[in-house]
Length: 114
Length: 113
Image (cartoon, rainbow over all chains, first blue to last red):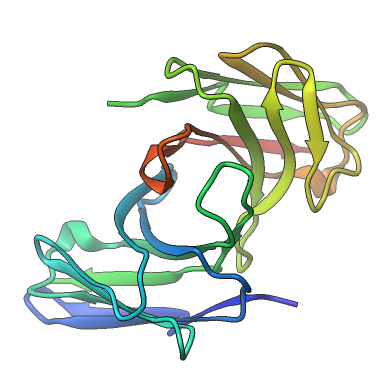
C-alpha cells in the first residue's frame, strides 16, 4: 500500500502564477520529510527538508509546511517560471539516520506554460 | 556539482543479456542504495549497502544482485535481464550527518528489448 500520496497528479499553470502541491502520508514513525525537484531525465534535487512538527521552510520561491499530526505537507511555488516545469517528489523518512527507510511519493508533474 | 555518479546513463539490452550498472561517490559515505523509478510509482528500493560487503535486500530485490567491494563503488547486476526490468535506476548515498547528507545520482535509463 502506498504510504505517500501526492496531489494533484499533474498541474498546468501559467508563468507567474502561484501553485500548491500536496503530500499526505501514513509513514510511522515520520522522522523528516523532504521535497525534491526532478527535471525530465535527470536526478532528484533537494528543495527543502522539514523535520519538526509545524515546520515551515523557505528557499527562494519555494516554501513548505509540515503538519505531523495530520501527516500532511504542502509545497508552495510562487511566481512560477518556465524552468519550474518538473516533477516534484515528496519523500518521508522513518528515521533520521542512514539506517532509515525512505518512502517516495509518485510525484506531481508541474507544467508551466508561457 | 554531481557527487554521485552513474554509468552508463543510457543502456539498451536484449532480454537474457547481463547488465551491469555502476555507481560511484566521492564522499566516503558508508550507506548506498539502488532504486528503480517507473511511471506513476514512487522510487522503489532494490538494495541497500551499509558498507563494503554488507548488503541487504530492499523491497524489490528479485532479479537483481549487487556488489560493493570498495566503499566508493556500488554495482547493480541483472543476470539475464527481463523486459519488465526496463526502468530508470537511481543510485544514492547517505552520510552520517542526517538528512542533508543524502545525495542521488542522475539515473540510468535501461531499456530491455
